Image 1 (cartoon, one colour):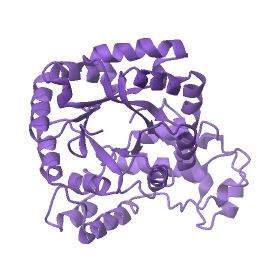
Image 2 (cartoon, rainbow, N blue to C red):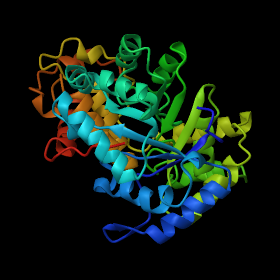
Image 3 (cartoon, helix red, strand yellow):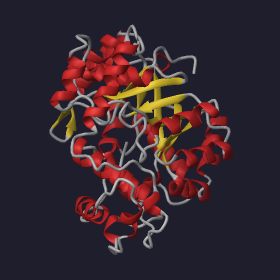
Length: 375
């Protein structure tokens, strides 16, 4: 990991586009500026932009710069293999798409309890470790979307993991559906460097409600993105913070405050805390996640988690809420639409929430279409 120059990385999921194609001229200018500013970490996956992220990196980065001048991370995604024999050909296709002969980091992508079981059954971790022994992967890690207890189990079973990529931002820090703080603490417990994704929560911490934005404006300092990214980068053990940068203006802003990185001071942290308070007043379901409602639910609905997903999607327009709803919180538990309206949850709720009504609203939001996935 000695090649990493600074703790800010170029996330290549949201690149500049011209219609359906990557704007390679703009992307090349952004790559040049990023490297000239002293940064060198790039992150991609095969599913990003339908494979166009990998090939754009080949055209705009790897064909233009010496291999030792940049760090490139890619991922093994469960949607692209069904058995162990599929993994090596897929990996080789990724090397070719990116125009390299090794990856600096290779992550087991979007790990959750269910995804981990598939990876285990296909011996994906063992295959990746073999690729590392061959020099085709320099560092082996995971990206993660699930409860902290699941992360703890994975890191216990595979201590060879060298880095963990988690969703971490100031709004998700105490969110019961994401468990950002708890996942971070598990990484610290296992002494694993942390790679942060979604520090701006998919742009939602940039496009703040007016009153929340005014709190940060009163600091007369940086942009909303600057406080979000500096919050994430300021935690001990954070090796890298990724930001999906889609134009040069965003790039200049991000590098402006990350070139001479300073963690949030007490005044700035207090302002961020205030922003969280204000955001949570925006028509949020006022669930405290005490989980009293779940004990007697005959349909095994993880009510607080589904409400957290509803809040995330309806208030913040967060596409990742669909992923958490469909791929994490309803895989082994009932969907909101499974509610039989028995009322046991409402009898147990200390907040006296109309849970049956709120579950119906949640079902309307999530259970009528296909989930969106990604990170």
